[in-house]
Image 1 (spheres, one colour):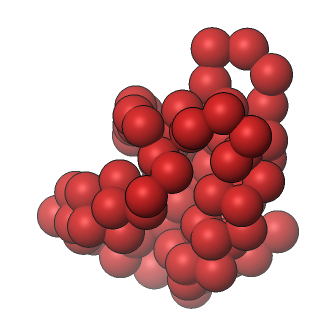
Image 2 (image 1 turned 135 degrees about the vertical axis):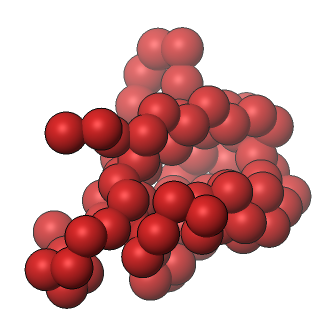
Length: 84
């Protein structure tokens, strides 16, 4: 698993739904993002679950909005910020 520096960072889990059959290609794309620590294709309510880390809280929204949700095959996201 990738890690960033020891400085105080913001971690979050991002849950994704994708177009049918596009789970693996979306996973491959999000794993290229430097903020992605881990990602998995899942079965259930969500198609892909990823863990991300950004330098500060304010960097999370642009990551999710401009990088993850902007992928053509992503239908919806749900983000849970880690507090501890």
